[in-house]
Length: 112
Length: 113
Image 1: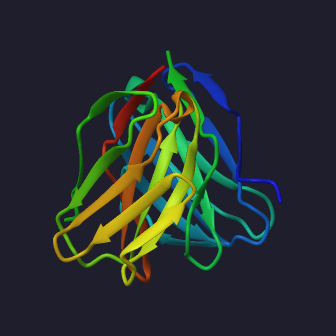
Image 2: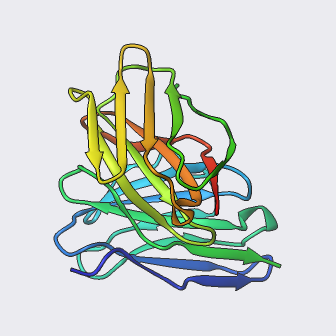
């Protein structure tokens, strides 16, 4: 059973471009979570999704950020018009029925 | 609002020593607590999960305890090895139905050969 997959592992975007981060949960997991780790800071919750539903987006910035988890395919975290402050490591986690969360390797976004 | 604190922020110990990492949280109404390790530039590896009804969990050289009423957890590492060098994070989940984890800022552990 492969672990949580994230791609790309590293992403470089210029200010104003869009960033799309993908997360494939572990097989059989229907719950996906996104966290952000800013430089020298701890991980902060962003959003919790189940298939086709956003359950909790209390940690998402109000503008430019969106997330989805379609019926088919990976979960996508989308950042529009990126700014330097968006540079961070973005981690995805998955769980079956909301139990122990298993984390992916992360996507490191650099905005130049 | 739940706040999770880990002290110390960094710790260096000689190889072979036993050590304890600390985690405290302000809201004792938790569902479970997880300990993770994070290697530089890598993701998180789950080490131990303790449910709110449990007092401790053990895996190999690792033992995690939970005192929910006082808002504390400890991670005990026995006979430390250089491969244990990493950042250790604790995270709490508030209650069933509230899925998000609140993380501490971590303890950066260095084992000196």
